[in-house]
Image (cartoon, rainbow, N blue to C red; front, side, top):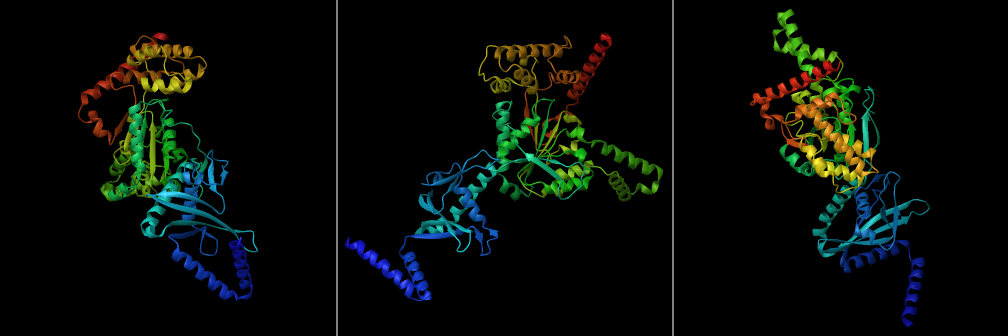
Amino acid sequence: MEILSQMWSLLGLLTVLQNVLPSQLVSLLHSFYENLQDLLSPYSYFEIPEFNGYCGVDLNDLYRHVHIYLNAVNHSPAAACRRVTLSRSPSSNRISFAVAPNHTVHDNFNGHRLAWTHQVDTVQDSLDEKRSFTLCLPKRHRHSLLSPYLAHVTSRAEEFERVSRERRLFTNNNGSGSFESGWVSVPFRHPSTFDTLALEPELKKQIKEDLTAFSNGKDFYHRVGRAWKRGYLLHGPPGSGKSSLIAAIANFLCYDVYDLELTKVSDNSELRSLLIQTTNRSIIVIEDIDCSLDLTADRMLKKSNANAITTTNPKWKSGKSKTTSLRCSSEESGRVTLSGLLNFTDGLWSCCGEERLVVFTTNHRDSVDPALVRCGRMDVHVSLGTCGMHAFKQLVRNYLGVESHMMFENVEGCIRNGGSLTPAQVGEILLRNKDDADVAMREVVSAMQSRMLVVGGGGRGGGEGWDQTDNEETVVGVGLRSPESVLMMGSPDNWDGRKRKEHGSNNCEKKVKFFVRLRSLTKSDSGR
């Protein structure tokens, strides 16, 4: 009791002295007390205010990183705090923790225990609040801990911000030509992931490893002097899963998607302005590149113009004059040219941003101009075909929730004999019979057997939704490549030497196409 009475007496004396002594002397004594406390304390304290300076306008980026780091969903310090605030934004399904005002959370780094205190003070004669974080760490290790720990906090915060932010799907406006609002967007919430994608396991692994190496390759790309971008060419028949693969890549990397419609772009200048407006960590998609614009005809047009100019006017034989004339004629046409698209994907303007994927899709790879798919533009070529057995089982798990079925052997036999279907065709049958696995499997086997008859020349039947074009493409592919999807790296010249060296195989393929078309014409004539 005597100790408590002495403490109350001391507090009363301090209150009296604070009212009696001049304010300057009180402030000096308070400063002396804080310095003495810092000298005797084994800890160092670092304050991180919400705003830089005293104006309250410039947000402190380090404060934002600390706030994200401490309030991350999977971060144990905030979850272990005695009092936290839970919140969830309307555009996200994630629940985030917020450290309550004037509460402390602890963290461990390199075997040392650190503490964060969220200080919130009300400004006198105002409704505003002054917020800051105070970091407490051992004084003897502050020089070796401070910089690495803050770098760790920043990297973790940026990673969590990238994963948790709302992704957007952009498309370009219809010929607006505006340099300010060339894109419109909606939330990107496509459910496709690599777990649900109907691809062979080895192909999934290769794509994921390549994407991970790309997203972590900032230092590598800067060291070798290359723009931090990567090109993907997805080719295969309709319904082979090209769009689903793009959505799975976007969800895997947490990137925004820019769906570029070339037919809405008026000229090369607008194409460059659209590229400038794209953000980092994004995927620029041009679907059906062979059908968007007649880009291959540019080369033929230039050659014909050059020959016409040389024939009609011999003075234009000079290379410089000829090039000037062709450039002028191309610009006067007022459209996107092959040269403009090449500069878009691999020119100087392609460096205006980092961590981007450029994805082209096509149903016919041979119809794409070789300049668009060479090394440096399309680094990875993914051939998406019909379902292999692993991909088929994945579809059955997705649609029917079945891990095994007695008709899997029949399906595997049909696939080996050329009766495989695309993922879209299998998915349509399974969706139609999702409540009865036996009926769905029987219908799939029936469709595959009909496909085998078409491939073998036994009839024109097939599964529902098939047309003659799909049948011809499948017959041409038999014996030339596996029906399963594959991934190729680098230029086509490196892994498809038939164009230059093995002309015999190329001629064989042409003969097969010729006979397939001849057979279809013969059948149509006999049907009449």
